[in-house]
Length: 212
Image (cartoon, rainbow, N blue to C red; front, top):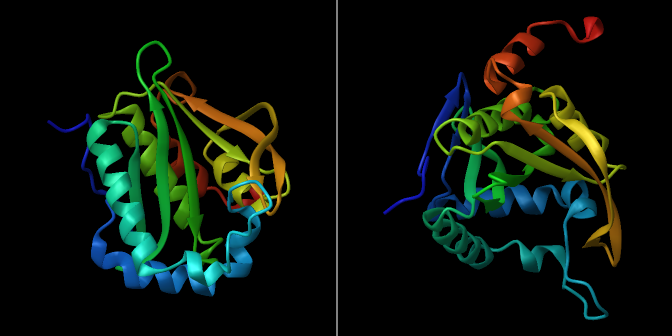
């Protein structure tokens, strides 16, 4: 038995969002190593005095394989939805919907990252719109939340472009770079986008930036 809406491949032009494959390891390692300066300041790390080790030691094919197997298992159980983001046939990032809670809450949390070399082209907003739209459709969620550090302007722009609203602040929410950091709470519900997230994003991106 599989969870609702899983597995799934979502497409909008050259942007493809699909489940991770073990053979993605080479691309993933290359992206993560090249993007250390772009990604490391925002990565959650275990708290405490013990060092987590150099960045490169945490971005290996073995780490990717363990992560992929764990996320696949969670996807089958319905507690997560892991996706790779591809652009023009090349893997450029990752989106994971985690902490999926059913029942009265019917909610999940989303996290994402993208190669700095292709950031700013609308790839991640498109990919995230596809994923959130899928969550509100076949997956059957009512709410999706994103928690973003106030200093992470690039990540904040992604959710703001899709109509996520700020709902407050989680104080000392996640351990990052040796300390617990505050995170802004962004959220969107099915009631916010009756026309659908993808439709809304397509309409938004058709308007020149200077007119928004």
